[in-house]
Image (cartoon, rainbow, N blue to C red; front, side):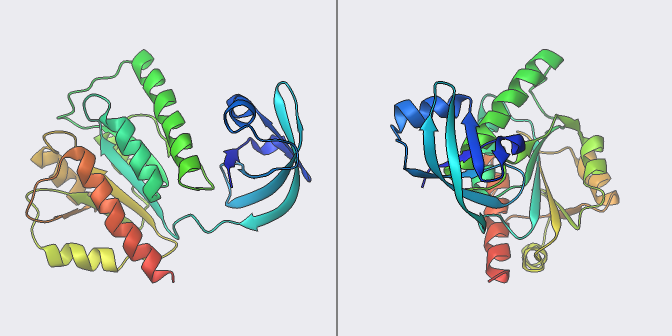
Length: 249
């Protein structure tokens, strides 16, 4: 069943009005007709509204709610990916795959070794692009929320944002003790807020890791190989997703 996101105000009782670019997609690409069914979410809560198309108008698709269900496609814990800004369009891939894997938020971090420097105009354009990618990935993967891509933060701002989270990790190539990493991953539980800090190309500087450790963010190893920035976060997310979904069965 096709899934679409709408604003909360577009759901009124048992009536739903789909607007914007999705209207053309429904009419011209999917060629859906009155009487066919689709699913709608508001991108905020975990509810799925199963609807039947009533009318296809010039600028909207009017639907009738048939049933409301609590979706089970979200992880039982919230994972926040703090991603050091990479070069080129790598951030687009990272956002897309992180959302597919179940990340709750993606926070771009301007670490010291970041090559990319975004001025206000570029940052605004990039943020809009990344958020659109998040929404598309949420639709594709059956998510019921649209993960937010936050504004770019400095390392200090990012650490402050993560200060109250239950588990805070920073994979680091000089960290040792794979068993320690395994123990932390195995200890993850539903209901937790989990922060993962990933460095940019070239990784975090040593004093950034020391600063993170002093703030209670735990340096961990991911094995004997050094992973690219676009690989490290996704590998950690996949490991966490497996543990969380297994523990919630």
